[in-house]
Each structure stands twice: as C-alpha cells, then as structure tokens.
Picture (cartoon, one colour):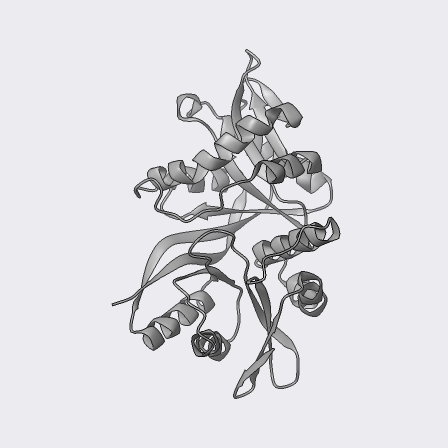
Length: 303
C-alpha cells in the first residue's frame, strides 16, 4: 500500500522478508541506529520460517523519495499495549505524512518510540490531528562500544545460560523494566513493556544470547542478555542485577565480557540507556561506550 505527499512515498507491507529486502541497504548504512528495527524484522522472519504466524495488525514501512531511493523506515510490531510505532530517521515531511496516513485510515496511535527528531515530528503531527498532546515518557540514548575499557575485577565469573536457567531468566526479564523505572525516578510499571513468554526465553537461551554472572558461592547474581547480530551489529540488553547484589561490580564485569565476546565474534556492539538513570549511563561510558543518537518513548494524550 502506498501513500504520497509531495516527493515522499510511504510503502507499507506485512512481510518482514519483503521489508528487509527493500530496506536492507538503508539498514546496512546505519546498522547501529537501525538495530531495533533490524533485529525485530529478522526475528519475525525467523519465526515465520519456524511456522510461527505474525499478528495481522503488524506492519513495516519504507519511505521513498522522488527518485525511488529509500530514505526512512518504521514498523508497528509491538506485542504490548499501546503498541507504539518505532520510527527510524526519516525526512520530517515523511514523518508528518505517516501521521496523516494512519489518521486517515482510522488506526489509533497513542504512543511512538524511536529516533529524534522523526519520532517527535510524527507524534506532534498525530497530536495536532487528534487534538491531543505529546508527553516524553522516556528519553533514551543509543551507545556504541569504542575501545573497551576493562572494569575493576568482580568476584566470580560469566556463564552462558542453559535450559535450567529459563525460569530465573524469565523472572528477571519481567522485573527489569519495573526496577529500571524505579532507578530513573518513575513509578514502577510506568513504562510499557513486552511480557516475555516462556517459549521466547527458551529460544533466546538456545541461541546462546543470555549470560549469568556466578559469584564465588555458585549463585546467579546478575544477568546480561544480547540480541543476535543483524547487519553486523549486536545489541546488549537487558542488563539486570537484583537489588541485594548491586554495588559489587557485577554489571560492569558482565557487560565488558559479553561485549568482548560479541566483538571477538566479528560484530559491533551497542546498547540503550535511559537518560534518567545515572548509574547505567556512568557504567557504560566508563566501559568505553559512546553516544550515537538520542531516542525517545512518546505518549500521546487526548483532551
């Protein structure tokens, strides 16, 4: 399906494979900035190959200029309410066109995430069309690892998660966003999030993308996860240490070691931070992570 305004054309599609074929060059040009869209598209494609159907309401989008070149991308695939869009960099007229197109076809939008300024432009135009307003629910920043700086040693060591770790990993994934809200000064449960499914956790463990830090007593005291590489970039997250175990250097040690493993495997490494969380920003920058782009999670309110 196509929508047009001036020179910009929006091309919607349901098939993640078609999206990757069309948007691949753009994603490859900016693989760090595109990490969320690229990894989710690849995951959806892999699930289709495994016979896992994708929700009918999901869509992918590319923006083309007057010459037909792809200049932006977005997706709406979030499995949790309010199903925020994820918007990659695109021309501002295209972001406004996207707001008009979704409004015209009666598709409700009450949240949008993604790169600034495109996500903000889209949200503000949607709010103008609906008579609402835009609230910055969360300011995030995407970092890429430069030169890895070794942290102070922490007691214990890293271990790849196995099938017997699935239950604890599921519990800690579920706790992660609540405690991230708390650390950033927001009420627990403020941030919309995906509730992990047991089958998803088992799949991630089978992929070898979850690690635990094991203390000297053999206890699991920290979790660091990562997404499989897409276009040569792997994204770390979530990173979770239970409250009783914090302040002992486990997060720094685990993220440093996982980062090294990913890089040794031939991929670049990136991660997100919540700009309102001084602890995570300090830890990652001390390890050598450098900012790439600011992003935001936006909520649209109605009057």
